[in-house]
Length: 551
Image (cartoon, rainbow, N blue to C red; front, side, top):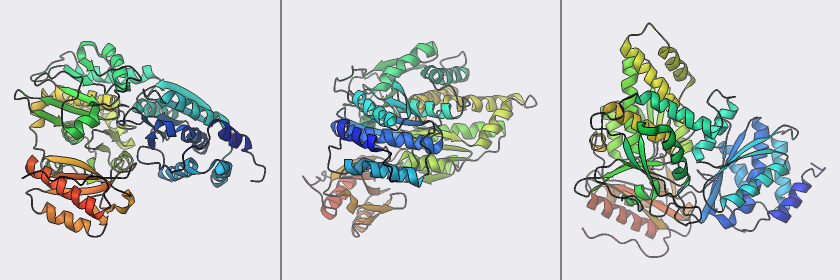
């Protein structure tokens, strides 16, 4: 392209958003994520890419500014495709290239993308923007808007919203309202109205009490849950905690879904009330974890595996009652507890599949079913419905020839679809779904937990010189390189009843993540530490060696 059409973009980038970091950054499963002070030029360039992507798809694209469960000093950005799904993988490569080129080469890369995809730059380019509560999100949003405007795109800034809300807005806009109204009020109304229909007028039921304690991780979820509180009323009483002001430095600190899941302990800022039903969400409210402390002061965790099994069992029951012939399946990752996988396959008799870590992998696999339930153990997941399932459920719910049992089951399925955010894992939507099922069954958390036994598990991480020395296969369950590492893991695993372990490289930092299971927590902790030590020794560990707990 000899006309140098994008010289003004190049000049603007040099002046206002110059590339300040020499090291490369990778678009991972959650987009770009690093220290906020290193992201200004990246956000400008993702604004450029979003404007190009919107023209290619001839649809509204989303741009979310968040670092999810990371500390407050971090931030990040990810793009949202037209149906509210993650960015297409081939464009992740373009995003990485665009983020890492020098300022001098920026114009050339833009021209190459335009030529490769034959982009008509005269087309309308609509981009929706959302951000979490991090102080850095304001300036980064401005950088993204500058990029969108530089390529004559039309940004619409929704301000502070949860990540799932932005995904929802994009899906609604591109469905011309068929999926819902692309506004905050439309989001609240759709979920709350469906929840109230499912709840009925009897708020408590047997062991179920319509009250929970909510850990907002001092993030955007803590803000938005107040809107739900106002609309839910007595249908679900929510005692909200961890709602620190922006810039307090408390975002995700010793609280939130990731902290509770990894540390397996009660979050700070939430009073310990014995046997009370509690939830924690993460900083951008796309993950949720349930937990409680029993009368013996023992902490109990109910994670994404538990939610997947609860939801799938309920859907299977409703499909049987309604006599709808739809394929139901569950998708997990290697982090799924072995107890849950055994329960799904042997007790529920529901197909279960394992895919690599990352929601995009789970979402894609779940699309193979009429009703696909997918959750990562960290609490990130949802349910998606095929067009066939959508049509069948809606038409069956309207069929007056059905008996009462069939009609009620089909109607329940219809309302469940509206309480679910199908676009992506949504902590608050998932919470309303779980609360609906627990209410219908009359269960407290103890009863839910009793459905199967989790194997004790432990997660560790090992800092290494270069995480790329670790490669895996079989949905990340088998280590390929270094060559001798998997053999060492196999030997260690064989020493413990119900032992299982795997290692995988982090997608964002030079860290290798270790996961282990065994019949007892003591054995599990020892196994995890021994595997971590082998990683340290064979994969270039740095810093202190992992310590093996005494037997």
